[in-house]
Image (cartoon, rainbow, N blue to C red; front, side, top):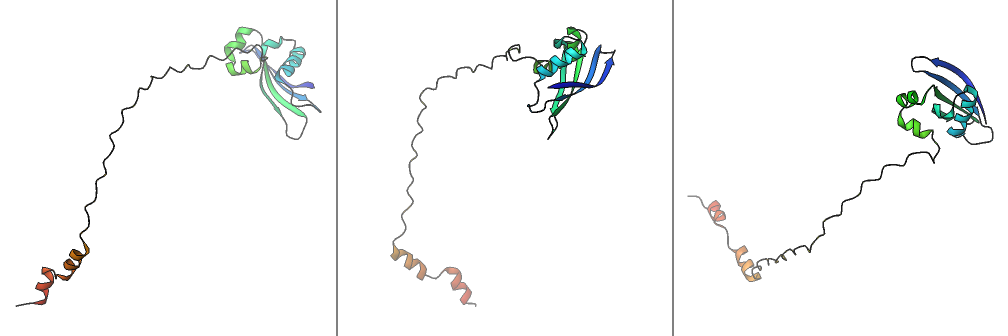
Length: 152
């Protein structure tokens, strides 16, 4: 892998050097941030711990990665300006701080035996009238039918 600095800008306000670079990684996967950071440190003459790589992306279909990095003059300046996720992203796995322990679930109250619901009693439907009564009910004319036929 070969790292080439394309653009270098001194930012006096933040006391840092901003760098745009390309990394040629022919025949290899996208280089690791630690490797790129080490090469940038040697080229810039700064300790690797003072460099943060903001972006490192491979170009589709090419064996070339481009990125943006910042080199600080002091550790305090670096920690004061850079977001924590970028600081952790650039660290080796052994040096990363452990994640805070996950929330411990409180033991649930023991469930006592649930009171059984009283069984619902089935309400029986009233028995239908015997067929003889049904037939008689149909044969009797209604009172309204009687009034409609006679007029006085």
